[in-house]
Image (cartoon, rainbow, N blue to C red):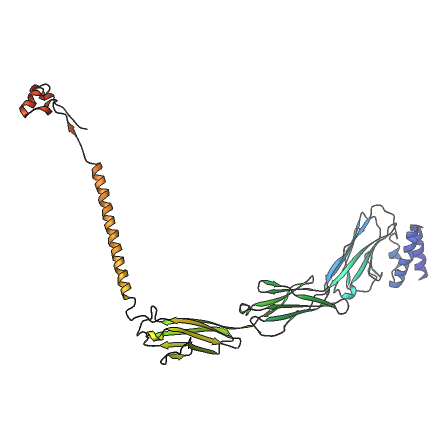
Length: 421
């Protein structure tokens, strides 16, 4: 052991007597004694060197618990200066390419004059802290890499104040995300609508957090079956959510449908009405009544159907279907008006005559238009010509005199010309 110390002391003194070298001489001796490093290995490199322009750099690291972190100590323009990596307790993890620390989770990834890169597998919360990159220059350089361990929350738990809620009332949902680092953020979505909740975060142990968010809102019947999502935002996890479907009770929706007749209700006809009622829960009771009067004695009610035969005008009035469930009741009305037995027939005949008259008028108008067009066509294409007889014949008393008085006399008859215009 004394031989090792003396040899290290001589090696250090041969390098330099400057304060920086004396400072680290005994540090290396201690490490050598603690981890039984050999003298022949240590004396092969200089303990410190004065080099201008050397820059030591590293980066902070965020890693999820249980995964692997990588620390890189990088040197620009290194000139054989020694690089080592220390843990937050200032224990040497790697001295050049040698690992004095007996923790097999640390493994050498790369070693060169310009970089010392080390990986740490299966990271736990106890590994979190500031790691030190050291470069033996004059003066010595240090760079710090902070390892932050992220712990994802467990599966969120969503709870409701009540399992079933009636329309118009308020409901409250609570979502809890436990055991995360850092604290998780919680968002709420109801279908495509984002809700605003009240969030609290509680630090439990070892810098772990439990986050709780509550949201309150009123519901309508349209919310029945709509999903409500509790979405967890955390740097260590993606797509983490809990979902709950709303169950909303609402009073019935009622509609009366005329099954028969399709047209007017006339005396002597039958009337068949069906009451359609939907609600949650399903309506347990459907009643028919006549507003301000009694339902005809011979009317037949079968479930949701009302049947009245042999109608007459005394049955006129408002007929109402009332449906109810545990939430409430609702109704729909049908107004009955009974017409004469022949109602609508005369109107139909008048409609037929009007149609026939319209058709005849259109046909006559078309014929008249055709005649006008044909007349104009023949007028434009008719031929016309004029003859120029002997002048002077127009004033003659008879034909003989006209011939005698004509220009050129009878002898000029051969010169008569006809012109077509």
